[in-house]
Image 1 (tube, rainbow, N blue to C red):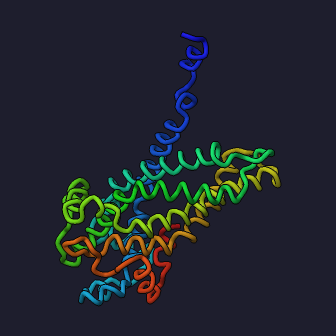
Image 2: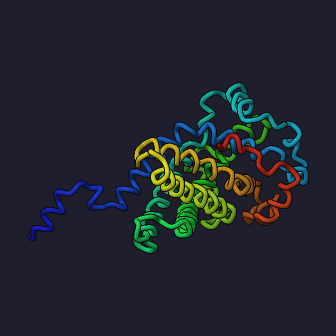
Image 3: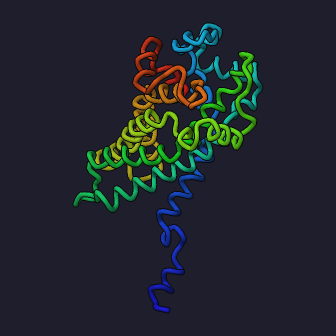
Length: 293
């Protein structure tokens, strides 16, 4: 056995398999973050579903019986009407989604940044490369995670369906996957994928590009060094920009994923993301933005 191979064996796993390690670490970090923030995600989804003008076509009275209540009142309403633990209803597919999405996104972005595009001579990553890389990474990661995102959105609405006297659609996560495949085939798992990747492209364009740009600016133009404070400020700015850019597409995505479907798996409320957008303009398009922030 050669010396380089012996030395490679002594290297930490993060250096021997850097991309695999980043995928696993991103998945673990996303799982912890999802458990902590999922009640906000559930509240956001419930707010996004309110005010659907398209429900009137089906004679659904839910639109009138569920007035806009705001983030805090919606969260308190879920606790009072459904129970405290229902704030985490749908968290299992959300964890699945974040492991696939966050891991795939970060690995793709790192590969594009280090191998495909490369940094400039001053070791800075140009803004245009960050924009393209972030959008491509988000699109690929979200497309792979679409089935879990679909199940998450539908399970988040189960509690509301029960309060409205409607039958529950799923007994659990695996039953949800099985039912969706039985009704719409494998293709049914990618319902709503178009607005989903549109949202991912916008979110990642705002998230990754703002993060890199703000961090670079702070390091070069302020006394701050490349430390946890710099990373924290960069993350706050990137999260704000990403939320503002991605919320409209997120509303469209959630409504398309949750709409009732016929036996062929076709949506009964919206023909496409464009059709949903046109109808949603009749109501506030940024419903749920505060919950998402």
